[in-house]
Image 1 (cartoon, helix red, strand yellow):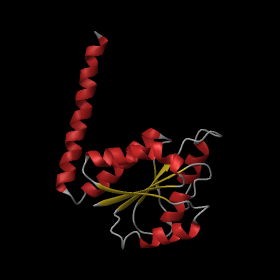
Image 2 (cartoon, rainbow, N blue to C red):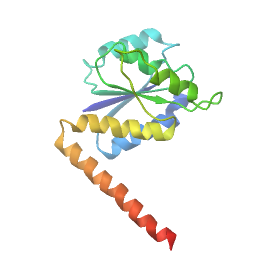
Image 3 (cartoon, one colour):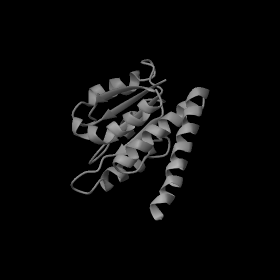
Length: 160
């Protein structure tokens, strides 16, 4: 089980690291790389077309601004792609969200929320995709859900 996390710039790492952190929690192997749709398009094509042959099972692609990376990768591979809109300065990531979520029919990209929450959820969603065929990972996700439930229960003490 390998999840590849790619982003258009190393400045996106502070957000995309949230996806890696959650995958690390579940023991999922993670590969990370900077691949820019606009500055390294040939590298992007090679990456997308060779993903399956390299053993990549799910791709999480973070992108800001025009945010073409997730969609362009998805157009060149059958490996599932999860897009994470990076929160930008200009439009707070709304531009990225619209760019990633508005894929034409036939080129699906699972699109998460803008920023850190989206990156965390991308990691969780990748784990859930992998858990369909991996019972051990499925059980780890069950335990994680119970941890979240307990955190909510523990919050009741905050109200006293």
